[in-house]
Image (tube, rainbow, N blue to C red; front, side, top):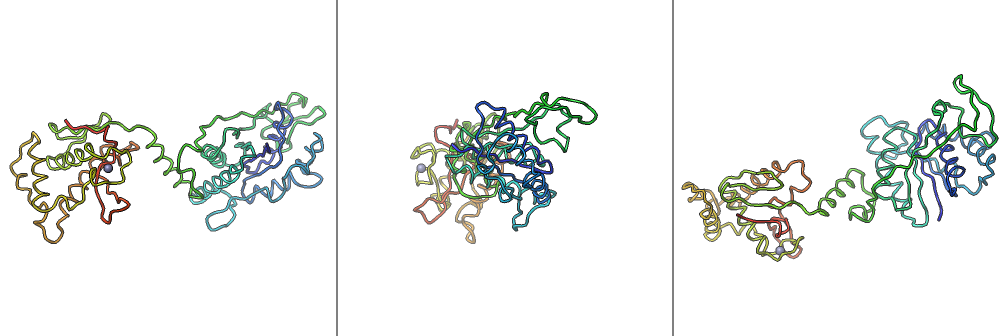
Length: 383
Ligand SMILES: [Zn+2]
């Protein structure tokens, strides 16, 4: 299996040689790195090219010569030092604005997604260099797209004085005495370690991750929705006595009319086709027209009567149904949006309020919108 190093870098290109040193000289068994990729800014690219890739003084080539590695067998040149580009395709000099930051997220995510398409390469991702967000996005991208054999790590050098020493790139092969910030030490005392960062691997678990190139923020939002559906959501109880909906220990108070309408939808869902992801069949759902005319009004009135709350004014159901000729569905839509607002507000902060609202669904073979509760009918009860 080919192994490639992907590193984010700012103005400290030494983290690349340090990481290579660990992977090829310290790690057991040593890694055979066949490509090195650096994600950076324009300033970072200039510095990395100057410090690492100069044919004679470049520390990458010096490192390879010193440790008897055939540099020709490692694909690492100017093209492998890639500069983050904004959405207009302009290279970034630095990450200064929220737009730059969003561009960075998209760029790093796309980069890792593409590299992880090839099952025959293992990715070693290093978060040591660059701005904090660069390393963070590299880690997050690997969390979304990494395979079991991909790793995320951070290089650590001791003694700590060396970390900020611009002249240090890797421990020399032949040990010698050096002075760093006034401190004398023997290079055999230098330790270069890789702290591996364990991450969740979500690849293959969430359908959102199988899509092509989408902005990072959209990707996370979609993956979050997928994730919510993977878990069994809490039960919902329509409490007809106390005129409320109970979900996950939260009580959402409803008016008598809202309770009656919700009960109608809950009954339909409970006596339904039983499919968890019903697209909106005629058993589970209603059309707005089902609440119109004599039949529709009677349906609502009966549901109201069965509630324990008695309210004579409601018996009239003023404004409901066909009595408003300009927009006969208006009253239903008003009640529905009030109900949904209360549910959304009552369940704010949770990941699944949409399962409890009266959702508008567009079944594949129907020409009109239908309305229904999407929650699994086994999780829905009325008392
Ligand atoms: Zn159904």
